[in-house]
Image 1 (tube, rainbow, N blue to C red):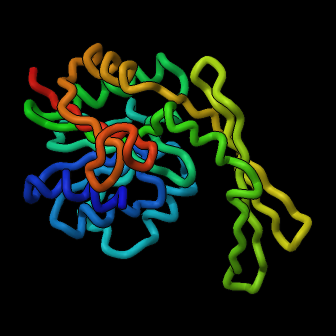
Image 2: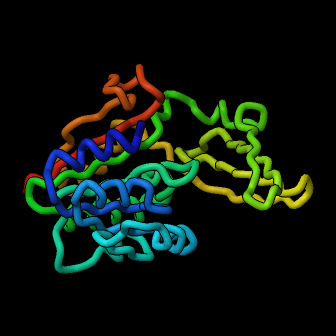
Length: 229
C-alpha cells in the first residue's frame, strides 16, 4: 500500500528525476525506474545497497551509499521520497534532531522549484509501540537451505520522543541475532514546523494509505511538502 501511494505521487510527472532516500534493497526505486523515471537511490546500509544492485532492470538507477549529505551534485529532482526500510520508517530512523534538520535542508536544496517531498512517519497518537511485543509480532519463515528462522520485535515507550525497537531473529532454534533501532516519534505539529524551517511548504498530511484523515487511518502521518522558493 505504501509503495503504490508513493509511486502514484512520482508518476504524476512522466520521465522525471526521482530521489529515493533510504532506498533499502530498492523495492520502490526499481518500480519507479520501471515506470520510466531516472532514479537515484541512497541508503546508509551497504548490504542493502549491494542486494539492490544485484537485482535486474536497474539501468535507470544510480545507487549511492550514504545519507542525504551524499545527494549527487549537478542534478535537481522533481520528487524526493523517504519511506519504510525494513521495520522502521526512514524519517523516524533519523532520530537525531540536528541530522533530521540537515536531511530536510539537503532535500530542499536538491529539488527543482515546484518539486515535492513525500514521506511517512508514525503518528505518536496511535501508540503503535504498545503492539510491539513478541506475542503480536512473532513470525517464522524458511530459508532456501531449509533453515527455519523465527522473528519478533519488541519496543519501548517513547521517552523525549524517542523509542527503542529491537528486531530478533532466531536461527535453528538457538543462534539469535538482534538489531536495535532508535526511532523518533514526531507529532504532526513538529513535522510542519521542521519542514517550514527547511524552506518547504506543507501541502498535505494523511492518516492512511487510502487517503484517510489523520487519526482515522493506519496510524500514519503521510506527508507531502513542496519547494516553492
